[in-house]
Image 1 (cartoon, rainbow, N blue to C red):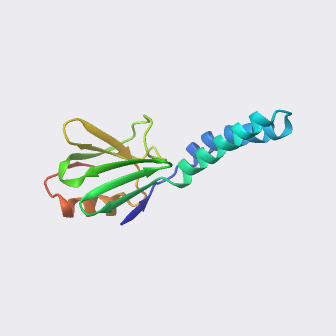
Image 2: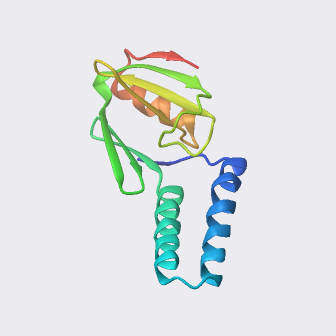
Length: 132
């Protein structure tokens, strides 16, 4: 099952205004290298913004954010708790959940349907400690 990331408007503005402004400024400049570099940055940030998703399939959570992927075995999850931790993570909202798994693994994500996401995980592993 696929879950899209929740997106905060303020975070989108914080990301897209400088990137868009830099891209427009580069188009008005002379250097071809800067134009290509800004276009590459725009494409990369767009891939991250529009490509952040979470999948649950066959006992595994797959976190996709742009070109990056992370797999978490649901049976290895120990706790899920609500957090507003602003640390860099594959989450496009500050309304996040922290998933602790394995010996020391932690990932912060922000599924739009957080309740449905957690319910689906609990079907696979009912021993997870939930603090929401």
